[in-house]
Length: 355
Ligand SMILES: NC(=O)c1ccc[n+]([C@@H]2O[C@H](COP(=O)([O-])OP(=O)(O)OC[C@H]3O[C@@H](n4cnc5c(N)ncnc54)[C@H](O)[C@@H]3O)[C@@H](O)[C@H]2O)c1
Ligand SMILES: [Zn+2]
Image (cartoon, rainbow, N blue to C red; front, top):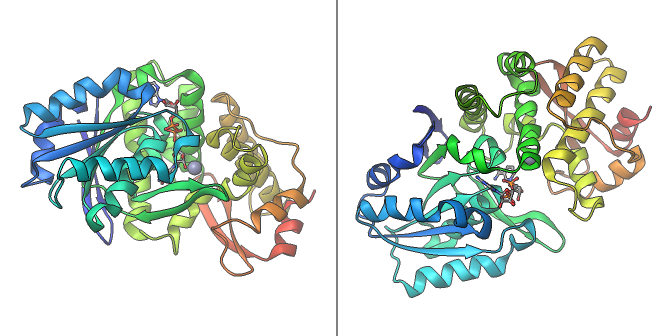
């Protein structure tokens, strides 16, 4: 098993990564939640059917009283009603401030489990057990938790770091192909903005990383290390953490325009493709590097373009929650593995995107 230590300003914790990592859950939970008697496992219908029994048994064997809250899988259920269901369940079971929540699922689940934990009794501990590639490399690490409201995704939430993240890479075997591909959007993003070694590894693997368990574990580890280093420097998104937004300003607009029917990772890939082209036109990135980056996206079955107009992107981006005042922080890439944050106003952003 591999360990990444996350040293965020508010809390430090371990991310344990490996095949069958779930078998360590009971013992590790006792270490990070001393005095706890009860655990609430938050999961959703798809994942619970596969892994809830295993996870429950791990915790029960370690002596915890275990209850669960299983919601219908899907982003449309990432809302306050489900959170209220979790709060009520914990209250009815007599949870105290030393008890804890376990998030078992993809990013929808880990975001919601974290948010429920951050608010119940003004904050109890959460252990994350991500089951999708996206949740392993991104959502479960770094402490951003939250829910969607009708006006937008992730508009309500809290920074609430987990006490432990346990990433069992064997769980990825049951992930549908298209969901795995979506996760590759964030994986390639890490390679582009900060990790040339990861880029090289992905390029060398030639699009085949799913079937090689050791390689997959190593790739997850590299991504978690990347995310941890950024979060360690800037937990609350005021500086370097913004570079993780590469492709996202544009991607979010595409995602919102589709009424959230297009998956996040796919929209981010399109956003990255559009920004990569814009970087070449703006002279911050060499055409040859841009070509290599777009080829990597294609290698992992991700799109690199969209027919959205620059005007529509700018209009949509000006309503984004990441905007501060009248300017946007646009993430550019200068070369593979190096990103830059550039503040742009509406006119500058339109010029940057226009062919
Ligand atoms: N907190 C953060 O920093 C952060 C970062 C990125 C994304 N997110 C959030 O993450 C969410 C997207 O995450 P996601 O792509 O994991 O979505 P998801 O949780 O909806 O999971 C995707 C699909 O895969 C299924 N699934 C998950 N694990 C499985 C497994 N092991 N076997 C079989 N099926 C499995 C789920 O049931 C679902 O149908 C979004 O809500 C996004 O806002 C949060
Ligand atoms: Zn993302």
